Image (tube, rainbow, N blue to C red; front, side):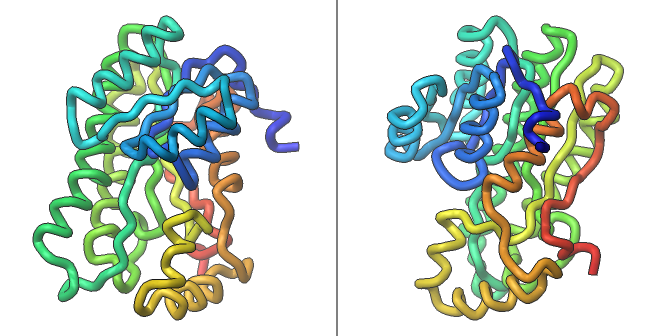
Length: 253
């Protein structure tokens, strides 16, 4: 029913971090809703699987920490479709460590991908959208970008960057019809989250997080993708600067 309200027919969409998890689910859903999707990721193997399974999605290997790569993936969408209507800034790392376990190198790497990478994606997407006179950006933040959590010493602050960029860019570019919103997922069963089962403290963390979500479970990538597609669509035409929790009630506690 929710998908029936969202129409992305003919929209030129770029999704980063699209080889797996929320990004992959978003790229697939947007294509199903009629969008012309360019999917970007540094994971060439994962992108190849996506391309094999969904021939209507154009895949581009790109590193969101590299300005030239980000320019190239935006240009790919513009060259293919004549413009860029939607950008989903999703690429990110999710380390699980407290401040004593987090090295300066860990901090720099997370901030490079989750912080700088999101900034660059928004920057060059807005550059393209400005030429077209409108657009919609959806940043993927997190409950960790709105509230404190243990063992999120680098990831949490990086997601505050996503929430902050959303508010500031929404105000800065509204006069050109460019909307900027974000989703704040709770704990979602992505490949990265499944891998926590095999990491020290991971199973306990997942059990704790499932209990912390009032709905009593973790979320699925497709559930976040539906929220992203809504914010990207004309159905959300009067929404900008919002950070939409998709968290099973976590932030409402």
